[in-house]
Amino acid sequence: MNDIEGIDFVVCRLCQKHFKSISNTHLRNYHNMTVREYMKEFPDTLIQSEELRSGRMDKIRGKTYEEIMGVEKAKQVKKKRSIFHMGRKLSREQVENWKRARREGDNWFQSDEAKRKNSESHDSEECSKVQLLRWQDPEYRKRMSIAHTGKCGPKASNWQGGIGNLPYPFEFNEEFKELVRERYDHTCMICKLTQEQVGHTLNVHHIDYDKENLDPDNFIPLCNSCHGVTSGKNNRVYWTKVFQMIICIVGDECLGN
Image 1: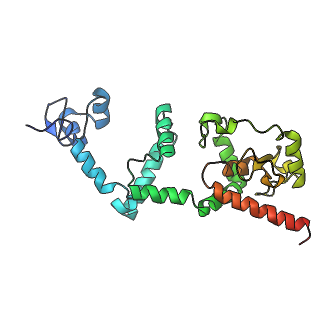
Image 2: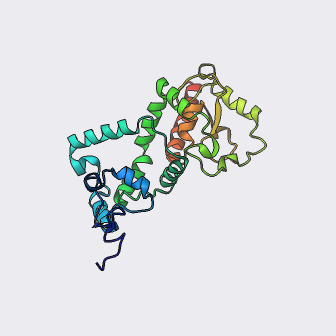
Image 3: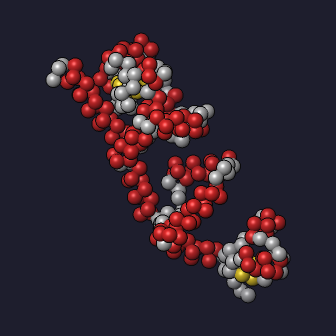
C-alpha cells in the first residue's frame, strides 16, 4: 500500500490490519477488548485516519446536535452526556485548554460564521440584561458564590492579566469611596439592596472604567454580585450607558423632578 499511515489509514497494533478507523466491533470480536482498553494499552497510536476524521468534521462543523441528528435524538444524546459527566472533574490541563480556547475564540469545531454569531450574542445588550436578571435571583447568587469561592486572580474566569492591580490615583482612597456610598444612601444601584442587606461594604465602581477619571459623577456603588457582572471586558459600552442613565434618574429624583 502506497498510502501514508495516520493520514490515509491506521494500523491495529494487535493484528497489523489496516483500517480507516479501528472500531469497537473489531476490537471486541477479534481481540476481546474495548476501544478504551486499546487506547490505554497503546496510548500513542491513532484509531482513526486523518482523512476520515477531517471528512466527518467538515460535515458537522458549526452545526448543532439538532441539525446533525434530529431533535429527539439530540435530546437523548444531551441527557446521556449530562449523566456521564455528572460528578466528573476536569484535569488542570483540560481546564487550562478550555480557558485558552474561550479567551482566544479558538473553537476548532466551530465555523467562522458560528464564531462570529457567538461573539455577537455574548457582546449584545440582551445578554447583559439576562445576566443582570440572573444575578438578581438570590438562589443564583448563592450558587455562584459557592462555585467561585477561592477563584480569584488568575483563577477567575474574567482574568485579564492583572490589569486590575494597576495603582489607583492617591485621591481614590477610602474617604472618597465613603462619600460616594453616602451620596447613594449606601445602596447598590443595580439590585437596590442596601449595604446592610448584602452584608458587606459596597464597591465603588468607575462608570467609564478609567481609573484616572476622578469626576464624582463617574462613580456608583455596587454590591459584590452586581459588580462581578459588570467587571468583565465584554459589554462595557452597554454598562456605561446604563450607569449614566441611573445617574441622571437619581439626579432628577434629588431635584424633585
